[in-house]
Length: 392
Ligand code: SAH
Ligand code: SF4
Image 1 (cartoon, rainbow, N blue to C red):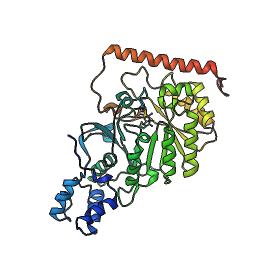
Image 2: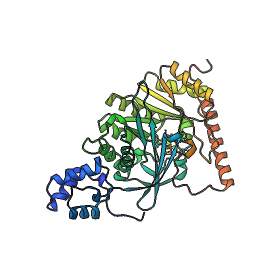
Image 3: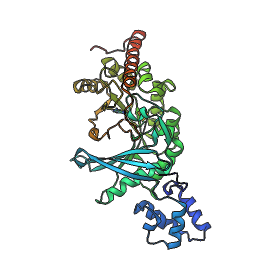
């Protein structure tokens, strides 16, 4: 898509749209008709809204885009339970979103969860994540974020289904794009717009402490998920480079503050990387860090990503890690991933990857990562007292 100067309508505030309409001499009720078309009927353009007069439809389409993203591909995996979509943005950048279907079970109703992107690429550069590998291209604007949800809702509506959950766990670090992410969350939550309950919206962060505070200040009970991956600074510096700016203790303190202010339990994500962050020492450090907190830990076996020397921890290691945390009173769930076969699992979204780098570059990169993680493990062990409980 060449650059399109028209703003995406789902990023326009209702009062701004109403003012735009009334300034042009249209009655106020047109605003409601446009909003119904946009948010309820998932219209792709004003032409799809039969209640509007023809000239107004043309005026609207000339000024705004109803769809700020163009969905160019949908790939289905896991026997239809996972759908990965590729979205082209104005200017040519591409991002991905993943729609996951969870059938009803005895204890829960069916769920349809969308994992959406907030940036094309990501500047944080976690070495086990394909998006981090891409580097940063650009922030998504509010409409480009929200329209991923509208696109999923439109597909679900064909089968009489509705989107029940949204997680900001696709490409990008949402809290480094707050000026677009916060209005997007508000639009998704507003019952006159997308209308999804705050509790059904989860924002995942690698630990941008000022952003976490701004999210807390927003008030409503959104779920905050924090990507921890290591409880010790020396290792987390390697796995989540932002840790050098906001060390793990500050991240956990900001998460506690969010829990206190909202009454909501914090979720921590912990990607299990074989031999890197899955040792007894790491389990003990994590248990110490979160002891007494109203927290929930999700252990995610690392999904394969090219250019890293690492793979998932073995299943028994993950089980042992989980047992260790539970015995410290920390609620822990193991998330066996889906979508791997089509590159749709956590950390595999790399819509813009332009082919493999040369083999020597990959080899050198792997070697550097191995050295860095080995140094982090050694350094911390020699500098710090071994936490209580190790080796029991
Ligand atoms: N940038 C945000 C949100 C997007 S990433 C964040 O980092 O929290 C969503 C989740 O996928 C994060 O918890 C991230 O650490 C995890 N992830 C990244 N790469 C992964 C991989 N290869 N295997 C498993 N999880 C991964
Ligand atoms: Fe960015 Fe999250 Fe990937 Fe880290 S894990 S590089 S923060 S998208």
